[in-house]
Image 1: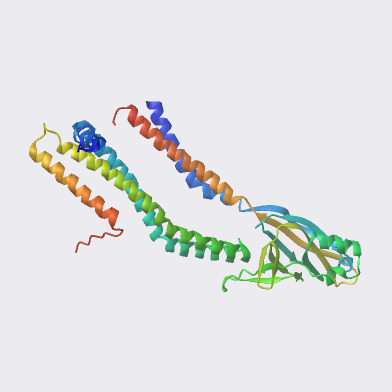
Image 2: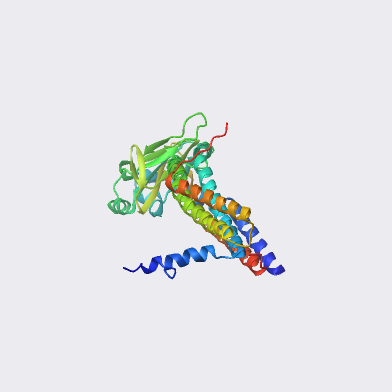
Length: 163
Length: 216
């Protein structure tokens, strides 16, 4: 019985792993840079989305008061007041809900970014010309990133409380 | 490279400026005037025959709303405003019945009283009568009931008839102004979208310039 091709050195999967391990440190640095950039961009999107969601009620209160003020000032009539009230309510609902869409997109983006960073550090750890302690630290960082990615993929809410 | 950088900065600034100005510019287009504020004079015969009434035809699209400011500031005068569908109006006009303007029932509309000491509210009616120093702020969308109005696109006619209690005068004078929803929302969306596109373009230019300089 012969070994399947994919498990041999010429197989596709071993080639991919080899390619990751054989990247030079310049390429690894690029991977880390691109990964961090992508993670920061998507992380920012997630933070902005969460901020909009948490401020939706304040925005709704402000807009409701402004609507009342516009009515009392005579700028709008009662029908316009009613229409704007309903618009404000639906918009506030969307502001609360949009986090479900954007935070999930951002989570995928951050994980892709972390994956690139992980490949970068794995590449560092495989550099034979580097100091062994440096390579070990790179491997540990790659491991930590993997753990973080696994947690963020499998659990929706992770909070760290520092008393 | 210097031109590239200037282009990036100016595109970014343009985007920020458009995003900031969008609500200010669009606020100027809150309403569109259909009939500017003016004083109209009709004869008191208008309360007897449709042909003597003041009639202003309007067309309403879906969810379009008109706002009528109707007032009387003249002694001895009472003026009544009603809104009919153009079909009914033409029929009443042909029938030419005596006292028809007073007897025929118009479409529902709402008028508001802007009392700072009360919650916003409106009164749903089929006609309003303004006597000396009365002023009404009316909104109309097509039709309604005693508890609300709704959109019914189509052609309508605003009619006004009235009376002058002074024996030596047959003049009925009233003030009217008609406005409709402006294009505020569409202008706001257009300007904001252009602003967003400029910001995205600035980001793309920044990435291209960084790449050209060989930083990444």
